[in-house]
Image (cartoon, rainbow over all chains, first blue to last red; front, top):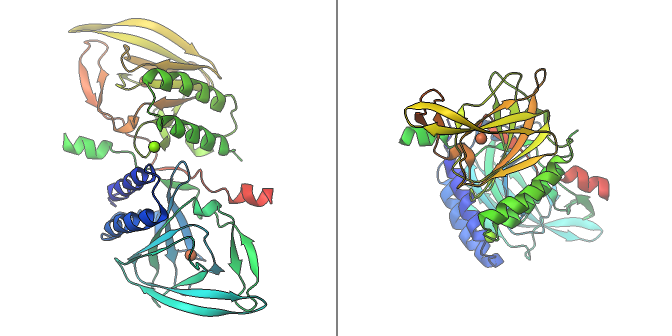
Length: 199
Length: 199
Ligand SMILES: [Fe+3]
Ligand SMILES: [Fe+3]
Ligand SMILES: [Mg+2]
């Protein structure tokens, strides 16, 4: 049975950070350390939020009630990838299980997009991207024969932010609000079992 | 389809209130006004969180990440009632559907408990109880032939607070951590439909 308390502690620490109105640099630095701690163990993600589907899954794990940050489990099935897209807010990606490749893409108005930096992520690794940086990319599962899972943190309610996808052949962009795959999120707050055990 | 945005707005307003470190009097006064607004309409509670069960249900709708307050849907099936219990934190009860009766009980060490105030709640009504007040009571469905639902707000993570149940015949108390009925809570944050509709 997954130990959801790791996720609860992560969310509480991120909330305390949010309450200090941190600069983006602080969000990225302190958020990276907290996310690295969370994904150092792969024993806490509920099975329902690790399930691959017909396309990649974006399971909301937690959204800050004031929408200052959100935490999402991305599950890549075999051969799955995102469209080319942007974010508009800072982001942190921590690899939990498997591996992924991210390819930065540069729009060239009216022409094919140009490929930029290619990043490979292995379990335990965390990368951060600022909101001011070139943040157009696509991501795919880098494992040929099983699903991969990364935990993302964004500087807003990422499923509700109006952003864009891009056509790699023409650099044309299209309005995009991603939403989330799941209509229910885990209940992190039932500590009755822990408390009874500790009595 | 329920309009979950009412619950989202309520939780955001309660979070902003929590961020002001209010006195208990302010929590009760401003929380009462916000809860009255929430329960003035019965069009937002997801069906899964309105389902009666073999005993009364305590569905967590939201817990503040810093555990300063929690919001719970109590569903009373026909003939169902709580044990005699206390709370240890302030509470607000807003009647959403049906009706309930709350009976205050006074412990008399070694003897049967004495019945106190009897409160009847109808839809739209909200009552508050301070943490310092005598807060031992039992609650039951006041409708003989269908379920009743009230929305409760507490000054903490009520499912994780160590409190007590009482034996009405002897006033003896017993340690009690209620937990919650549900392992998943509603995702209030997928606004992709609303945003697409508004474009
Ligand atoms: Fe991305
Ligand atoms: Fe009660
Ligand atoms: Mg604050």
